[in-house]
Image (tube, rainbow, N blue to C red; front, top):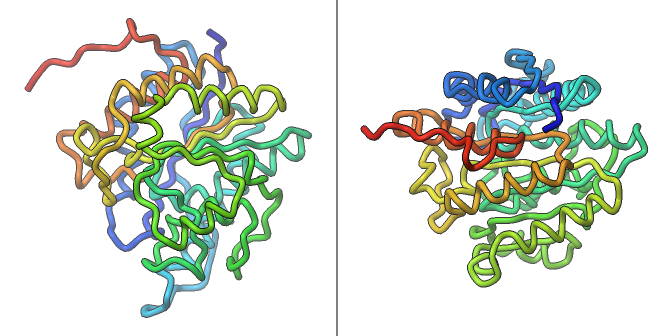
Length: 308
């Protein structure tokens, strides 16, 4: 297994939605031993600590969108941090709600463009996150990252996009909660979407293998964005947007093992972990185990935990 320089970046961002608690996510990953697990796999791990947003105007209560200026501040800081971290190794953005991906994905895409490589994104999520600030009904900007990074209009005041990602370079796996406006936008797009019915009928390996082959053929960089709600809430309850019927423990590990086998992953988001909603750290541990699988842990290396 190739040794890598892993850059852990804490993103205690909790303004992409109204329900609070994700700001505790980065420390939960540290307590669950993310850095230690990756070092045991032979990687060199640097923990860059927790980020802060760039200076921004205070948000006013009562707007259509929840805390847009705070999200803009985080997005600006994350674009810069992602570009810097990519030059030093493989960054893992420890969230924080999924609005952090507006900045993390835009930043890694900018780095890929500078290197002359196409950027690809694997979105492991129950939701498509393809709303814009103009179409969102909830007003929560954690549902908008893919719209922003593909260059959809409506993001007034946000940092100019350094390098838009072509829709056909994005694959969403795990969908099971998409509203009407998003469904229409996705249908009109070139994004590859695989919902849980498709996975039940055909398995999770086939669509993932096809996408990974496309990334490899293009010589692309691969950003993986893993939302806790990709998983069934029965195994990972620590998320404010639980949707029944998610990926099983085995399906999720197969995805991450295939990502590792491909050798393509260049950056990773771990998002939407709300430790306040967890059960004795169970969800945080599952997410750490999945990250370890994506970075080389084999099935026979996985620890067995005592009951109780």
